[in-house]
Length: 181
Ligand code: AMP
Ligand code: MG
Image 1 (cartoon, rainbow, N blue to C red):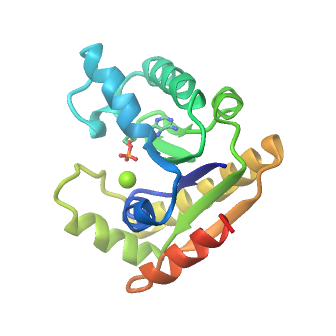
Image 2: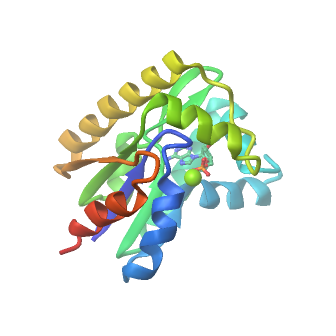
């Protein structure tokens, strides 16, 4: 199966993937890591949080190249984004040419409450997250939902909305794993 898992930064995709890793025979592929590898090779960025500040055309080139690489893999869970907040606005993480490479069977959108997302971002010192207000996060969450259903219509892949509230990680992991049964 080819699964996409996406959500705003701080929704908890990576935490869910950490729990899922030893429960599945699928390979977990971080799209941002594939893009970062390419960006490092080309001397375009030094860390993953610089990628979304690059000129849009360069981001799209890296995105396309990453899609080709990931498209060659099978039995994968791709940890990525439906929308990336750039200085030029929301960049789609899964435009149709990316979907055509990845060919997902399922699109999972991880969500939490905006105040939970704000707190998680503040306590994550490993990343240089951009500051978003409560209303910014609400907007970003709905942009992701619109994008998820657009991807669903284009590919026929169902959308699973996965709520990852504080203290409920185990339940989120369980619901995610049901898709593999
Ligand atoms: P992450 O570690 O998931 O936050 O990903 C790091 C960075 O990679 C993101 O901030 C984006 O700039 C970039 N990225 C990840 N997935 C995509 C995608 N599907 N399309 C474009 N950029 C992406
Ligand atoms: Mg992540």
